[in-house]
Image (cartoon, rainbow, N blue to C red; front, side, top):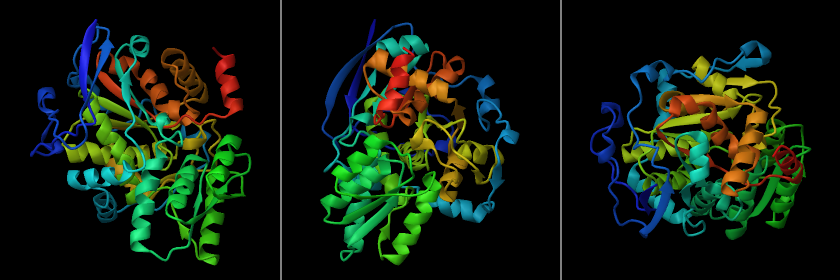
Length: 413
C-alpha cells in the first residue's frame, strides 16, 4: 500500500505560461502558498495505481465529442439562436477570473461555509480501477455546493443594492436552499418557486430556512417563468440559477480540490444550469492547470450535451430524470459558451447508472448522494476503460436524497 500525502486547502500558484501552451509536467503543478490554513491528511491508496500520466495519443479523437453520440431523434429538441464568435467571447470573458479574485471570493464564502473535504476511498478506487478523489459537497450546511454561490451573491447584492427588500428564485431545491439561507443572513425576504411534485424534503428545508414556498408548473422551466413574472410585478430581485457571482462563489470548492488532491487528469462535474462546471473551469484556468473538466448530464435531460455536440444552445421538450438537480430543458447561453469552449466533453448517464452510483457511494464510502450528486461517479465509471490508471475527481455535489429515492437505492443493494 502506498500513502499519498495531501496538504489540504493550500492553494496552488498560477504558472506564468498559459494553459493553451501545452500540458504542464505533473511535477510542476503543485506549489502550496500560505493562503488557507495548512492541514495535512494522509490517504492510503492501493499501490497498483500509478502516478497520473499524460493522456494517451489515442484519446485525441475524443476531445471534442461525448462518450457516445446522442440519438437526437428520440428527443423533441429545438435549436436556439447561435452564439456568434463575438458574443461567445464576451460571455466567456465575464467568467475569466483572476486567481486573486477567486481567492478573495473564497474568503467571503468561507465566512459562512467551511471548506469541505476531498478523500480517496480505497474501496471505490479498487472498484473503478483508478485513483478517485471524491469532493464532498454533501458536507455543507445545506447538503449541497450551491450554498457557496448564494453566500457570495447575497453579500454582493447587499453591497450593490442596500435597499433591496426581497429576492425570488426558481429551483428544484438546492439553489433555493442557498438563496433562503443567504437571504436570511442578510435580512432579506426570500420567495422560492418550485414545480409541483418537487422533492418534499427539500421543500420542507426551504420553508424551515425562512423562505415563502410557491408551487407552480410541471418542471423547473415553468417555475422559472412564474418567478420572472413575480420579480417584475412585486419588485423582487430575481436570483437566477446561473450568474458570474454564483460561478465565482462555487469556484471556491474547486480551489480546495485542486489544492488538497494530487494532480488530476480529469474532474467530472454534474451540469444543471452550469455554475458548478464553470466554477471548476474558472479555477483550473486561474491556476494554470491542464486538468480535463468533464461535464455530466442525465440521458433524459441532455440540453448541455446536445449543445456541446451541436456547437450552439439546444433545448429539449422534457427533462424526465430522477436526478432533479440536473433536470433542465433550456441551457444558459453563457454557460454553453464556456462549456463548449473549455470543457473536454459532456457525458450522459442513464437513471439506472445514477442509482447504481448512489449505491456504490453508500456501500463503499458510507456517504449518501442525491441522484444529481452521483452523476459524476456514474460518468467516470462509464469511462473507466478510458480513464484506467489515471487520477480523477468526482464532484459529489449534493446529498439531499428524498425517502422515495433512498428506497430505490436500498432495494437494489
